[in-house]
Image (cartoon, rainbow, N blue to C red):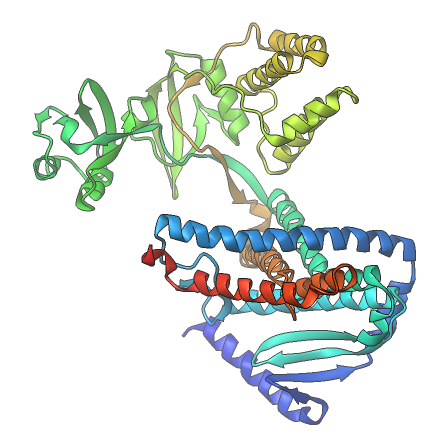
Length: 531
């Protein structure tokens, strides 16, 4: 019996019974069933009228955020359509958000079905905070709240707050902008809160118990260049290579010779690529992990427990290059031990500045310590998500390279930069360069703490709920700020254009409307196939 589907059916039936019993209190408006109430009005007024300066400051941030996101949302639609045309993509880059009666999300052409209970809770909270903030700012602007309440569309929960729009219009531009932008701003705040709670949950309920990795260093190699599989010669044809593969087990790692280079790959991965008709293969370069076929979660190196990347970095640093080490990995409930010999690590990639480091470098001219503050924030965030690397050889070398870049490119603070470079250089001297085993995409592996094992189901549900809460609130908030009426973003642009360009306001809003309609149609139609 599908208990998830049964719970959805029971909820829908109970909702229908409740609506039918209270049908006199609901009013049908178009396709919505709305129930107006006075409950909550006094609370909204009390919150909105207290601390007016605080709410004014929040409103300013809300308005600025609203216009920035509005422009970003429009740009995102344009970029998606241009990308579809340039790549020939036929699948939509945006999708309708729908509920699914299953416990797993479902992806389809032009839609994304969220598991029902995640969806119903997320939409209810989204509507509550969205309309609640509209009500708070309506009260803050001393505008009458005509009505408020809740409703349903099929099983979709709704909430609404109706300000006296004529009275609000007389308040001026900024009061209207604060009211209109408040809803989406509340959704963004809820999205941020979801991330914070998710990180807190991960750090509180889960413990790092090893290290996972995504792949090995690899190269793209033409099929025609392959001359041998193990000790068997091949003529560079896919059929010949496939015939040789029959001598190997599915999970056996094979040595592949192409030109003057040696590569390694498991039979099942090579066979899959050849079966797909690929003429250029992804083969793993000659490093210890690929050669040994290392797979699983790394839990120890030479009996020393490995909890996260930091532990692995220190273990490899202590081992150095050319050292035999024993690595224990976990696959499901079983443990396997591999014996590898470390090799010299490749030279780290050169320091590549991003926008943030440039900004903080400019601040360094007037506020000494700005660059260190920037990296301290990064270290704090890394620690928050379980990526503590600030004391490893690679991190120290990175910081030294960063200050070297500052010294070479910003002469006014070059002396200070060289001094900082020497500090990090001193920390690096005397330390052994880490050995290398050849793995990429290293991340900590988390497992639920033993004390919370009985609550695993509830924690898994809460974790998924927070992920969808972030995605849905962020997405709906952006869409709601697109510059087209009756969305809040359209109301904001209409207020500004009517005030500062009254002769062109209607024409501009009409252009926005046609443009967004065209972009949405282009998104959901296979426009990429036409080019």
